[in-house]
Each structure stands twice: as structure tokens, then as C-alpha cells.
Length: 137
Image (cartoon, rainbow, N blue to C red; front, side, top):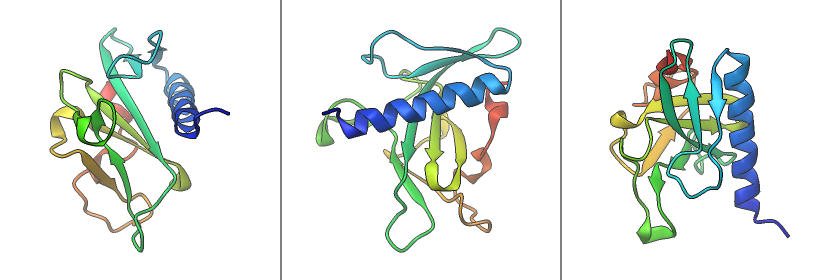
């Protein structure tokens, strides 16, 4: 039986690819899964961006927010904070809300990233990056 987390990750990456192409970007997919990024987005001017794609279907208990791990590496304590050496943009898919967040990695300060697409009044740190496809422009 397939690893469920890997299966869900592949689905998030496929959605990202389709959505980016629909917006006029070119998307490259590295062979294998040993790199710290999942896709490379190329914009109209030829500039490229390494993208780490994360997704979640689970809300924080009793809250309107979703949490993803902005880290690389294997296993709990072996994970390290995602840095600009690893990727340029963290793409977060909050599945129940149908919302993307495109957070420049340079803006990430902790391993946990919280987004609140179901709270229209949220002033969270990463809310300015909701549907911010312009980070690739």
C-alpha cells in the first residue's frame, strides 16, 4: 500500500503545477525527490524560483488556522528550518479552503507556518501571501 503522506504530497504538487501553468508560468519538475525543493517556476522574463510545496487538510484544533512544517530533512528532530539555500518560495495549499500561500523563504522565521484562509479578519504574519502569485513575477 502506498505511503499516504507521499500520496497527498504528490497530489499537492500536481495541483500546484496545474495552477501555475494555468497562470502562464512554466513549471519544471526535478527527477527524484532528494532535493529540498519540489518544483521550479519560470516566469515570463525567464527568471526561475525554486519552490517547496506543502499542503494540509487539517485545521488547528478549535481554530480557523492551518499549520505546515517549513522544514527539510528526515524525521522529527532531524528536520531543519527551510532556508534560502533550500528554496526561494514555500507554497502552502490549505485544501479545505482551496487557498494557496506563496511565502518567500527569506520571510520564514520558524519551522511552523500558520495560515488562516478561513478567517477573513486574520492579520497573521503570512496572510499577505495568500494567492500572491506575484511573488513569481
